[in-house]
Image (tube, rainbow, N blue to C red; front, side):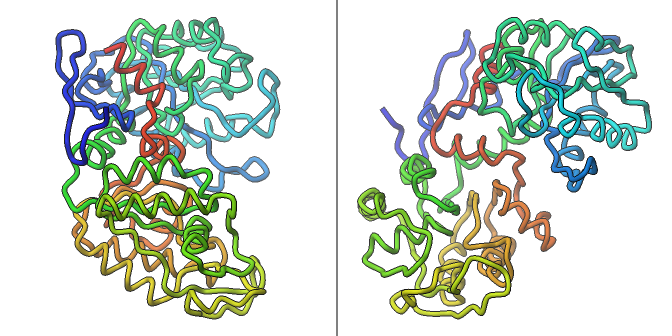
Length: 418
C-alpha cells in the first residue's frame, strides 16, 4: 500500500524505529552507521568512492568527483587511519587491464591535493597501508566479478581493511562487488560523509518535503522516465517535463511536432500520465512556445514559434520565452524542488537558453532545490548558480532510481549492516 503524498511510515529495525518511505525505495539516514562517528585511529579504512572522472588522452578534464571525494579521505587521515581507495573508471572489458582506463591520473590528482604520495596497486593483495598513508586500487572493473557482485571478490575487498566505507552515491543503484557485496561482508560497514549528505538531501525531497513540491524531469525519451514520472505524481504538486520527453507529451495533446524527437508508441502512456496529473490535482504545464531549427546541430538558424505552428520540416530544440516565464511563475510558489534533466539541447548554443532560464528561476526562488543529472548540474555550475541551490547531487542514475521508487542496493546494504 502506498502512502499518501507528504505522509511517513514507521518501520521497526532491530528494536530501533526509523522513518521510511518504502514506495520511494528511500530510507532515512537514522539507521545507517556513519563514518564520522567511528574511531578508526590506527586502523585501515577502505573507501569506495566515485572517481569516474572524464579524461582525454590521459588528462582529467573535470575533477569535480575527485573534489567531492576528498573530504572523506581527509577525514580518515585526520582520524589517524590508513586509507585504501576503490573506484571504477569508464567501461573497460571486465577482468582486462587497459591503460586508457587506469586510475593513475586520478591517483596523481589526489596526491597533489593531499600533498602526500598516493600509489596505485595493480593487485588486491598489494593494497597495504600504514596510518597516514593513502593508496588507490586500480580500476575495480579490471577485476573479474565486479559487475556480477561475485561473493569471493566482495570478500577480498572487504578484507582489505578494518572498516569499509561506502561513499559513492553515484554507484549506489548498482549491486556490484565493491558497492553492495563488500558492504555486507565487511567487519564494519558505514556510510561516508558524501553518501550521508546525499541521503539527507533526498530525505528532504522524498520523506517530508515542504510544500508545494515540484519536480522537473528532462531528457530525450519518455520510455526511460515512465516509472519516475508515475511515481512522482504520488508526491508532487507540480510536475514539469523538458526535452524530448515534453515533445511526446505535446504530441499526446494533439500538437504536430514536426521532425522533433518523439516516441509515437508512448502517446497513450503520456495521455495516462496527463490524466493522472489532472485527477491528482498536480499542475503539469507544457510548453506554449518553442525554439525550432532544421537540424540538431551547431550553426542552425533558430526560430521561436507557438507550439501550434511548428514547421513540419523543423524540430523542437528548446522552450521559448513565454514558456520560460510560465515555468518561472509556476515554480515561484514551490518550497521544494528536485530537478534532473535539461529543457532542450543544452549542449548546443543557442538552444541552452531555456535550461539556463529555468536554472536562474530556481536560483532566485525560495525553494530548497536538489539538482541531479549531468546537464542540470553542468548548467548551474557553468553559470555560477550552484551556490544558490539547496544541494547538487553527484548521482544522476542513482537519484533517478530513488525518484522512481526503487531501493538502492548499496543503501539497503548499509541499513542492514547498521
